[in-house]
Image (cartoon, rainbow, N blue to C red):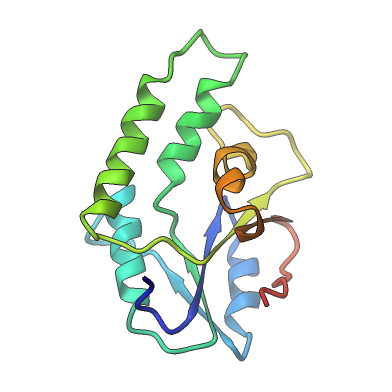
Length: 159
């Protein structure tokens, strides 16, 4: 059961300050960025950001911190044929860490994921690609994941 009165959207992928600034000017969207200090990177930092969101009352809260980022990165690395053969151990480890944090109620999963995909250049091996979000995550909640071009500062209709 969600405790947040807002519709929470996690912004997954690399974005620019221009895109975040455009979103921040929207009347019914509150943008919450991950703090640079304190929690560091990874699940703990994203979880802390999502906990801060719980106290916000607005129609939409867009969160620029993804608790699944490490899982998505390992998913992409596992299927990257340009790298040496890798097993699924790192992916499974990252997934177990996130699942344990979620089960410990360190954060609530968002209502939606907005995945930013850079269509202007092919993804480098260490860059986040939308295949994880469009594969296993979307198969569980098909209407809760949307992909948008990262270069466009457009906020989709989430209703």
